Length: 463
Image 1 (tube, rainbow, N blue to C red):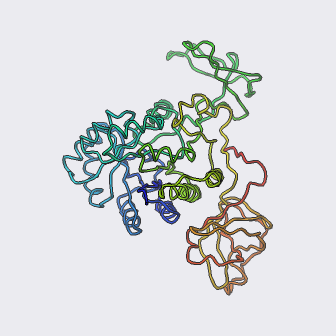
Image 2: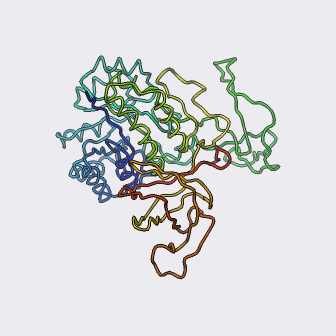
Image 3: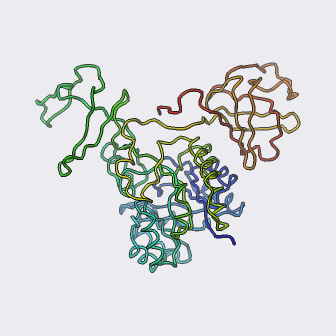
C-alpha cells in the first residue's frame, strides 16, 4: 500500500527548483512577480521566468503551485487580474491565494482553476475550513499556530478537502505573518511581499543618560547625540509585562545587541507521522530565499522519512536521527516543533543571539565534470584548503575525499594548453573557480552535485 503524500519545496529561482526536483520534491511553490509575499527575495521576476519554471517542473512529472497571496489595496486589483490572465495561461497546478476579494474575482473569471488557500489567511478552525471548501477551495494551508490535535479535528469535521502544513523553516514572530514591524521601521509592508524581517534585527539597550535629548525642536523629542561609545549592559535584565506580574522574560545581550523577537526555526521530524495521521497530505518547507545547499539537504532528509510513511510504516529512530543530522548541517536558529505539541511560549525564541547554528559549510557546487579525466570544476562558496575533507552529495550518492592538489584556470590533466594554470592551496568563496581531480566518477548526476565540509572550529557563525 502506498499513501499519497506530497513533499512541497520552495522555488525562489529556477536553479533552486532544479535542485529540489533532482533530490526528490513532489511539488514546487513559486512566487509570482509583484503579487507574492516573497516578492523581495524572489528571483523569478517576470512571466518568462515563471513559464520556464512551470515547463521544467511539468517536464519532470511534478506539480507547481504559483503563489499570489498578497492582501491587495485598491490600486493593485486591476493589475492583479490582468496578471492572472497570463499566469492562468501557463497552466500551473494551482494558485496559492489569500485575499477573499481576489479569490472571488479569480473564480468568477477563471472558474476551472484550482486554488489553495494560503496560511496567511489564518486557517485555524474547522468552521473556517468548511466555509472555504464550500466556496470551492481545493486545499487549505493551515496556520502554523495549530496543534496536531486541532488539525485532526479539522480533518474529522471537514474530511473532503486537502490539508497542507509547514514542517520546516523559519517561523514568523507574528500571528500567521501579520506583522507591522517592517512597515513601521522601513515602510515595507510584510503583507505586500516586501518584509524586511525586522524581527531578526539586533537592538541595543541604552541607559537614560547614554543619549542627550534635544527638547528645543519644534517637532518634539529628538535624539541628538550619543555621549559615549556603546558598552553592552552589564548584569542580568528582564522584561515584565504590566498584566503579567511575576513573569520575567530574560533579555540577554552580547556585543551585537539583544534579540527579543528572534524566533527559532520549525523542525517537525518527530511529528511527521502524527501530522499524516491527523490528515495532512502535503508537507511544506519554508525557504524561497535560501540557497540550493539548503534546498538539497532539506529535501533529501524529509524525502527519506516521507517515503517510509507512504508505505504505512513508522519512521525508525535511527532514520530520524539521520534526518536531524542532515537538516542541522544547514543554517538554522535552533529547532523547535512549532505549536504541534503545544504552545512553545518562551522556548520559541532565541533571546541571546542571532547566531546561525549549523554543523557544516556549503563549500562549493560542481559546474562541470569530465568523466574521462575525473576533473571537476568547483564554484567556491566558502573557503576550504588543501588537506580538508570534503563530502560530495549527488541525488543518489555521497562521496567523501581528502582534497589534494587544486588549480585555478584549469587542471594539468585536462589536456587544455593553458599557461595560466596555477596551483593553489586555498580556495575562497566568491573568487575564481577551482579545478580538482576526483577519486571517483560522478556519473550523469554531476550537474546537481553540492560539496560540503565540517566546520573547522565553532558550529555557530554570526550572520
